Length: 412
Ligand code: UDP
Ligand code: BGC
Ligand code: MN
Image 1 (cartoon, rainbow, N blue to C red):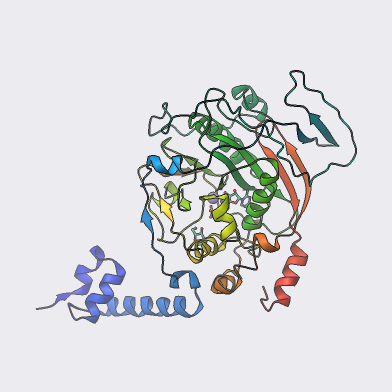
Image 2: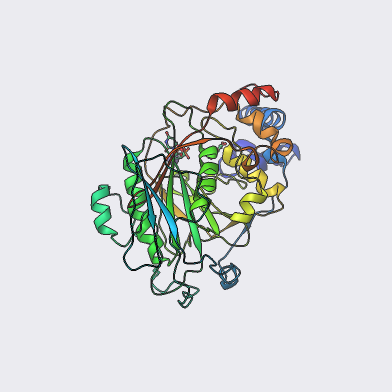
């Protein structure tokens, strides 16, 4: 005799329930029939109006750290040479030319317009006579305490006195295996930013990385565009130093385990696997939001993020599709390591859900090669090497960009 589906229901997951009903393994009660009808309608809606993302054949696998991933990265080849360091203050810009090979730095300051398109690396590379750092940083302990105190910038400058201009840090006793730019999209979350810097500088130093933190902020008044900020961060950070690896990082995610290495493995890595907000579970298999790590080559091959997602949602799913279209596979640390706390916040009122996101996501496959790094347009309004981070403030040209999108047939 068949069991009543309602009785078996609560312990069975929804897709499996549908199979049981369809194959006659259980007898549907009125409530179950209604539930199945609802589920089918949702599935049909998703199929016709939902994202093309879900139709891409993902081959996601859990990725465990192996010694070869670090060894595979090329050696640091940036020469020690005369470099220009650009420092811009709140009121006026200073152009500082510094001769790194001299013991006494010669500083020349001028208040003329800042040359923002300088091409030589402007952060100082590690000495090349150092021995490589060990494959596994020796001071890692596993689970770490997340700090929810929010020191002032002045306090932090004292806590992390070894940071170089722009929040650049690298060990002085061994050659880092990874040169990593952390790119953070940012607007109006001062407390989050202080919490983020405090937790991250302490962790990244322990991981013996050659890294810097880039806070990318868009001109006030424009609709928030997380993805385009990431592209701007990538482009600008690349002008300052020879980064191998880019980690695109929400400002409100704080790591709970120091074995979660901030480096780039052979495949693009999704880092925020287990987040407290999602009960430490992956919400869906193709998710690629929160924090992602890609090598420079990988990011260039997938043409970066799309520039066209204004408002909340979808831009990370679009990136996930690009990873797949670039013939990469998303890699992940296990949930015991890739754990994060999200600083509590409500849905951002000033960042409304992007109603256009499904239209765009449906077309990623047609658009990805012409929408991204290849057609990135913005204006840098200021670039400052601050003590704890590099701040990039940019006009994302929202109006022009929306007009181009509309001309291409996508009305948002
Ligand atoms: N963000 C920001 N200010 C905003 C909206 C977003 O700084 O007004 C940045 C910030 O880095 C944040 C990320 O964009 O962590 C993602 O936005 P949000 O946290 O609102 O989205 P969630 O992932 O929590 O849904
Ligand atoms: C959105 C993503 C978001 C995810 C988790 C999806 O529906 O499209 O942008 O990261 O939900 O919140
Ligand atoms: Mn958040």
